[in-house]
Length: 288
Image 1 (cartoon, helix red, strand yellow):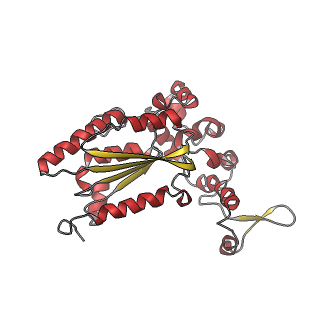
Image 2 (cartoon, rainbow, N blue to C red; image 1 turned 90 degrees about the vertical axis):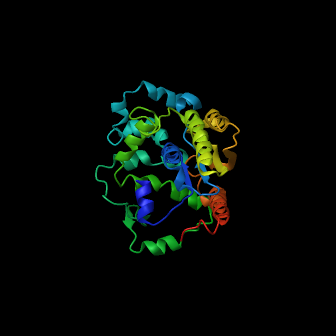
Image 3 (cartoon, rainbow, N blue to C red; image 1 turned 180 degrees about the vertical axis):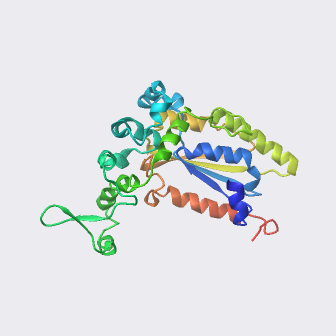
């Protein structure tokens, strides 16, 4: 799908990034379409990359290996099970968990994001006539106000269809289809990185170039899905190579879900490095 989309948009080269389980899709893209990256200095970025529980050794995730795939696939209907056990599998941890149970259990959910509400003097909630006035009154520089807003993310999210969570959960746990694409076979990220290194080397020999891929990884300080063992495993599988340069950074004060929040700086650093990479592009090779 991605090559067709880029062709439609008349885009010849891109930098790519992923968050959490998106690393599975990102790795397949790198192995299948390396020619779509920067022609001189390809740049890739991982945010809180997902690691299978066989490596992270997170006990509650290991326990899911005992569950049948059909049960994990019923994400939308098993409210209590989702709230207590499956939520962490799809990247909903920390502050995002608050209020999910009540949001899911409402019998009459809206088909679109719920309306903003505000407490009335008599107790019950009333719809805000002008949401923009309410938003303008919020002090977004106040950390407590921002944390309170985050508690309502789940309410908006579950007002929409969430069937995709079930499929992603099965994928992340390797309970549905293999992680690899049909064209290139790999079982886990350690296999994929070795394959990627060979792909880069072969491509450089074919084109007569010496491209060094730049790969960044931003880890959350407190990652409830990957943990310390998972973070260490992911870093160590990037063995020193002449094909790429791997850099890893732990972002203080962050958790899995909100690592990309601009206030923590990782997303700003990522975009700045993307900009610096493209400034090195040979003007002759550049395409409008």
